[in-house]
Amino acid sequence: MNSKRQVESHQYESLRNIPALLLVGGLGTRLQPVVRATPKPLAPVGDAPFLEIVLEQLRSQGVRDIVMCTGHLASQVEEEFGDGSQWGISIEYSREASPLGTAGALKRAAPFLAGRDEFFVMNGDSFLELNLGELLRFHRLSSAVVAMAVRRVPDAARYGTVQLAENNRVSGFREKDGMQMPGLINGGVYVFSRSILACIPDGPASLEKEIFPSMLQHGVYALEQRGMFIDIGTPEDYARAQSLYQQLCLAAQSRAS
Image (cartoon, rainbow, N blue to C red; front, side, top):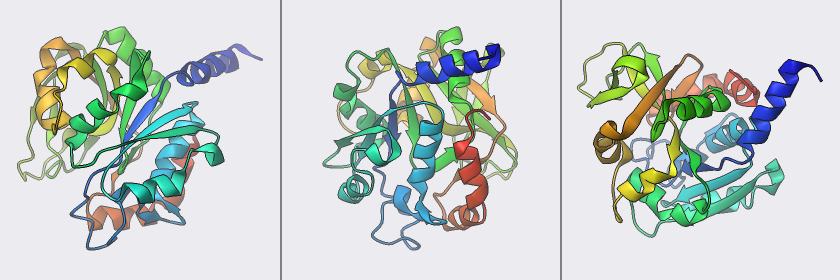
């Protein structure tokens, strides 16, 4: 085995010990006219549920322990993916009885993270092509509480933007304002230190609107990505995902972007 393969093997072995939480419990109201009675992450893209593409990305890069934070139509997600053995991974479920928001869902999943000092968190309705090992190393080198993957897009109008200071430290967030301009947006993929769980209150809360802004002084850092990005939250972008299906599959199967 040459040195490059040794480095790659170590990377994937190290990711095997890092769990990933997938946020898949949202209502997906904007997409409901297109995929009625189906959870947004299960919306079919090509011949598979969109969430399967996200799972393939995790599996291809060595992540083996998955916790799905379910809510809306949770039973459909659980029936579709089961225990994960079909994909050679382990899947557990943290089901919310009523909407808790992205932060509340994470807090509820804390018992599944016992003994884990760091973990990935990903949105189940978006895909960002990236090297997860690189994001993990960035998180460790930055001594970050949160390391987020960000992506520059030509039109950030519906996303809101991430503001950066020196050394890739996040200095603030700008709410979506409808202005059609390029901007750096949150890509929906993170590495969290376990300490963030103590900063999330019980009950409904939002990572994006409440927790991240309150954590800036503790160390929130962003690593810019340049690979494929798509969020299927609107009918227009869901239709675009269909046309990109083969490219999404190839990107998900790539070990490093």
